[in-house]
Amino acid sequence: MIYWEIFLAFFIPGILGYGGGPASIPLVENEVVDRYGWMNVTEFSEVLALGNALPGPIATKMAGYIGYQQGGVLGSLVGIFATVAPSLILMIVLLGFLYKYKDSPKVKRMTTFIRPTIAVLLGVMAFSFFFTSIQDTGIWQSLFLVVASFFLLEKLKVHPALVIVAAMGYGAVFI
Image (cartoon, rainbow, N blue to C red; front, side, top):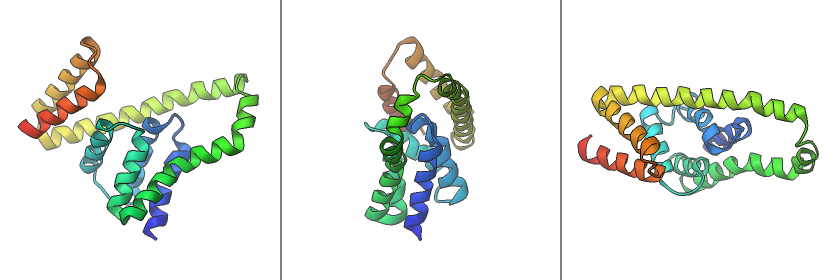
């Protein structure tokens, strides 16, 4: 039964997460934290941070890790397959159809309506992580990391991977 739950936990977000891995992260969080209770928000945010620090698609890394945690090697394989299966099915079945109508005004309008929804989901997740961080590490540590990350990313144009590694190092030493 656990393998079926792992499959559903990653297949459903894969279907509904229009926009790739980052768009499906809030949906995966809902499944893993709220629906199945495999992790709490803090553990999920740590897995997300670790997944962001490693190269490759975030959704498959998280599916592999969480699947392994819940069901061993087979659980990891099930989670990874469930993550890529919706895209695989969509590409096989609908590629010709989508290619035919890619310039349709209705398809473009649908995409225009979906993007703000994804932005709101990512924003809600970010605020949830921020408030959890405040509770766990304190407001000053959290604000320092937010301000320092913003400054490094936006002002100095440091690569996001380096900012993530620096934040992990800061956390390891000071938190």
